[in-house]
Length: 424
Image (cartoon, rainbow, N blue to C red; front, side):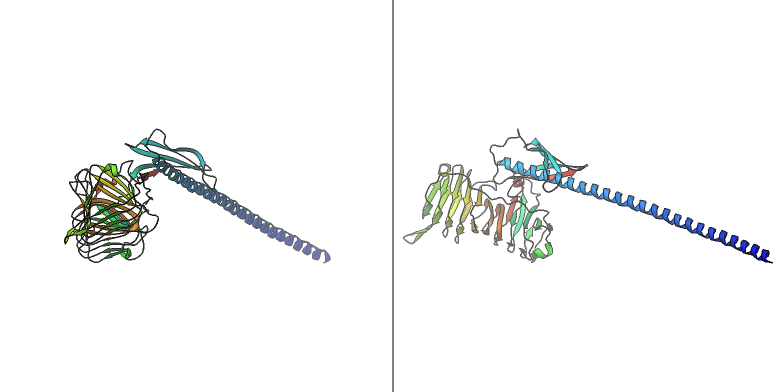
């Protein structure tokens, strides 16, 4: 009996041992399987993380290389504009640079400028960061001060029944898109009164909303939109002229000046005079060719007085002070001049005021980004205006000369800008 019990116990122990061993073997296999799966997932995640890191580094390197190439174009344009300051212009030595360091990073850029003033200039700029390389090609062109028909920093107001149109004095074309605009993004900065007609576009400051900035009281325009970048408004420095140490003064008589009278004067003062109850206006007559004046003070035209620019004559005025034209006074041209027959440059260091009147049709340009301009016109104006604030009173129309968008290399304030660009 005891032996049977012992045999039964041995059989039970054998079965238990087998079951225990099988159970532990299965658990071990399961553990090993879990370890393998976790290892595969870990390796995959590690690989994914490493790939993501490499991708991030590559992406960052490409972005930095792009910025370096952009910096190369920016510096090339800057160097070209610095070169403009040295007269006369020459294409024999154009800006270039090799492996310049982009500040605050490990990127470098190189650039070359090729071409000439007749066919145009091209910038090739290469930016490098780690193993990434980006290349930009930029076509440069000249941009003058008078790209717009009317451009203001702030308020621009056109009174009722005003027409803004365009033409091209070089080609004779009348199919020209005139552009007026403000650099401001504040509300109601462009006031277009009833019956104003703009045969062209109205442009507002960078990222501005035309619906908020333009106050349309019944005008007709073709399109409106915001600038993509602010136009350059360089400070104009008067040329070195002979200091005459005096005013240009006329009272009830005609004072005639010519090219030999070009120079620096304190003021221009033209007044009327009453002789035996007869009122004689004062007149400043400019004749005989190209006349350049630097007025360190003010220009004043008394009632019914005039500045008359004769046929085949041009007048350039650099004005440090203000311009004040009384009732019935004004500016006038004779003959059939181009729009640059008379040019005013505001060259003061502070705020200026240009109160201008035109007797009949007038051909002229006014560059005064720090001056408020009020223009009264008895006829049509052929030219362009740059102002801090601008107001055109009723009575005249403005015709923009598209030829102003194709400036010469020696024009005042001309600069190189990027016309087109592509990247690789």
